[in-house]
Length: 236
Ligand code: SAM
Image (cartoon, rainbow, N blue to C red; front, top):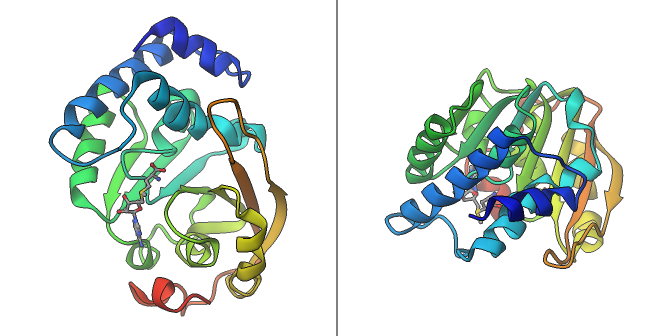
């Protein structure tokens, strides 16, 4: 991956990378492509497309939240590490947990964490519904999630992991407002409150990127999330 292009693309969203971070993005791209031949990680492969639609897109949420104040972050349904790994590269002070239900992707993430020499970051295998019943419950000040499910389902996956006063940032697209209307019940039941909706932070090469930001105001009742599979079959 062209290093000047990495620097310029991040500068377009006011992020100034140091040499080490540029090198980390370059290694990430190389490994992503090498592993993509063996396991299905991404359909986006062209260099500039990966740079914009995966790496820069992951950091677009820095326009709506100040990551310098975030201590513990969880990325639910991280896949090949988006947005969690780019966020960790740019904000290395954060403790990060990457969670995914597919074990092959966890193997890739462990490899990437090692190759990039990242510290205080763990890839965890399992479904959000099950892992929300472990010590991970209500232990994060920020939860992020991109391209995993519709918002009402996602709230049941994500809100149980967030501590009181923490935030959930959902990376959303063009149907943000419509999805939000259908999610009011879920957000309320799970202890959240919509803090803001940012419905367009698109760049030339990233279209339809919006965010829903939900604050956790109350503890999530013990009965949520419901058993694995139920949130998607019967959204709240
Ligand atoms: N967030 C990544 C991105 O934006 O490129 C990956 C998106 S991929 C379309 C959705 C991912 O969510 C898959 O890797 C899948 O295994 C994971 N996933 C879906 N439902 C899940 C659940 N209930 N718990 C944990 N992971 C889940």
